[in-house]
Image (cartoon, rainbow, N blue to C red):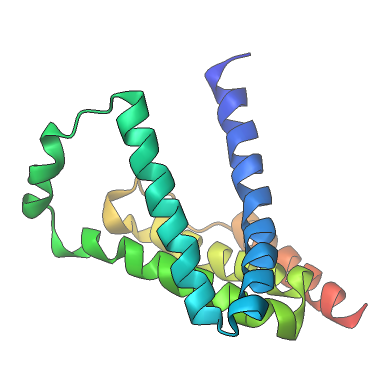
Length: 149
């Protein structure tokens, strides 16, 4: 299997994990009686897991000091992740998993097309096209269908 197909499978697996994580975190929020506390616990467990992986894999920590030279925008990734997890935990019991993630995917598509079109955050420029707009419209139609049925 070429790396391309491996990456496709990895992307599908990552996509499958997002609604699963939201449903699990929602279950945790019921027990701890707080979506924010559930998100905090989720990030704590993830941080511990990543630390164990870094140590077990032998990933060198020598470059960790270079983070001080990173541009300020690179520091908000964790904030965006915290917002995402907390929002998902809050929305799943109110909208359901399918509706929550349909809207999340629609939001992702809108932002990705803008990032691509303008080459924001250092990504290669890929201009908006009618086909890409049609894709967003189809996703929006899917959200409407999921909401109605």
